[in-house]
Amino acid sequence: MTSIIDIITMISVLLFLYAAWSDFRSWKIPNTAILALLALYSLRALAELLTTGDVGAALFSSTGIGGDLAAGLLLFVLGVCLWAFGMFGAGDAKLFLPIGLFIGWHGMLPFAAFLLIGGVVTLLALKWPMPLQLAHFSVFARIEEIRATRKIPYGVIMALAALATMAVSYAKS
Image (cartoon, rainbow, N blue to C red; front, side):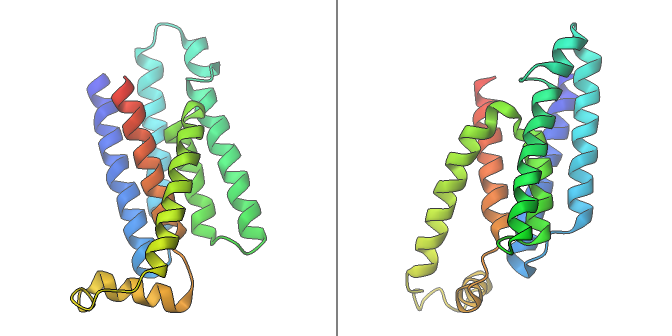
């Protein structure tokens, strides 16, 4: 069963990357990506419940499903508040829910640190001038467009911070 959990994690990594790329290209995170991530987490939680010896600990401990749900709901509420104040897009707010589910309660501090680092790197990258040798590549043209509009695709930073957090927690286990 642990191989199923690993497969689910790999598919979720691909979906996080898809959401980040979509946000980078169009400032939109598809609802299908969010729903697919929620479905994958549900499958992962079911697989964990079926393989555990102590269902109570798997459901209600901070390292189990209870901690994952608490992290997801906390980040989702934060995202909705930021959306209500016009600081985030709705897709960014929705993306916080599966991020919280996949990183869990104990991943919140590393996620916050990676989010801070990603925000600072993004801010610096948007301030630096673009080298002329790279200006003809479509990715760098998109960065110039982001710089001109001053709209940041936060989903990219959030997804990369979540993936870094997941990598750190996977390396520990």
